[in-house]
Image (cartoon, rainbow, N blue to C red):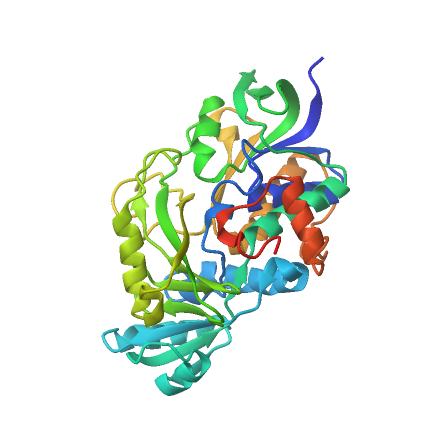
Length: 406
């Protein structure tokens, strides 16, 4: 007999595990499947920035407000899944002063806490900062350890009745009479499941999952490189205060700094070039902010693929594609028990999960409210327990492998 579940969530990154947690806390029977270990897609292969909203303030104020709100929530609930580093937006001598002023004004309009520092004051915070730094703006950026964040969400979901299956890829989706009737799973499961509702939270792979159900989800993925180098005690996140470009962010870890990133369109999130020029350019550009990283020892290098959704602009430079999220109800595509959640940022995963769970619960007739903004993640202040969760779900990604399990 084919086993059943009320909701099947496909995708074990931050958004998928966030959805499973939210559903389980509302008393909904939920099963989550991920083709690899948890966080093995975009979440665990990011630069791990906890956005304050400042990066998007002038170009996307709504998205910036979402980042700011979720930044504050995560600081309350996520504990040692984060590091409260703060951040600096740096204006170098060749950068447009008007851009700095525009970003500052936009941050203040949104309510992002800012402090403007001259170059000397900025170098007192980061002694090896470039002499070319003329001004800096301090903002409440931070660092996310995504392996811990994803595993803690999965653990809380499981504690409330969810079933979590890493290494269980979706192999086929059967649609009958306008509904998903069954989903065949491989790997550690090797059987079909009959869900009442299916949530596609597969990130950059959402288009592939949707296509199994005969639905088109037009993703426009872009790859980006991260380079982790030996560098002790950076302190704040460093952001180049200019239009987004290659090599404009440095993210601190305990004894390393993560340099990034690039943005190169890819047609397949599984098969793409990993070009050495991306590494070299990221290091070269980040060194303009922090010169010692030019000669620092490279510890590891990895690429991630952004889950961008852009049905009308899938070609060309993808930096301008919205980093907002989109919830797609596939009833209009002829599959009534199927929804996809695409786009978004690691910082806003919980909001994405809440939006998706609200929609699913509305369809299922579940009236329970969301509690994920008020409920602390399990192990939030116990790093050893968080790291046990990472091991339990095979959730270690390259972003934070220097921190997790130390």
